[in-house]
View 1 (cartoon, rainbow, N blue to C red):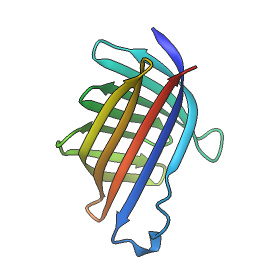
View 2 (cartoon, rainbow, N blue to C red; view 1 turned 135 degrees about the vertical axis):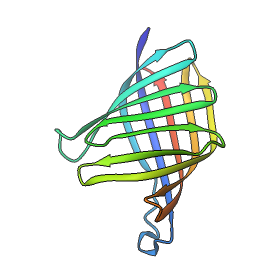
View 3 (tube, rainbow, N blue to C red; view 1 turned 45 degrees about the vertical axis):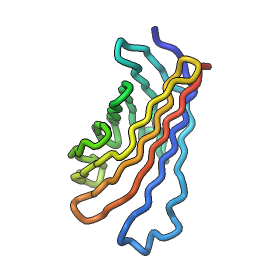
View 4 (cartoon, rainbow, N blue to C red; view 1 turned 90 degrees about the horizontal axis):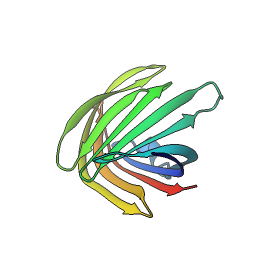
Length: 145
């Protein structure tokens, strides 16, 4: 059964070796409505991100189990990343300006449940194009509406 949920996504990045970004590591937060479906192994969460212009939309699908989280973005931004604690992954971040190879190494993949809804916390190191390294966190909170 699919249910409507309030989705709150918070992301933080601390870039190494980029002094020009010092002080710009404020958290980015998205609050939107989404659809949550319970599966045999966990949940599938779907929601949209709208960028500066209304026609710039990305559909996010987050597949959540107790020890694994997959984030798939399709649209203006394309990305398919799997987060499993201690497992290194390679993906491409697709933008209108070109694709960037990205290495992801999760250190924390924490999934809990509150009132039937998943709560996700990811902490990982991301290396973009073998040049830029960032300590990142991503929190996804959901609540029935």
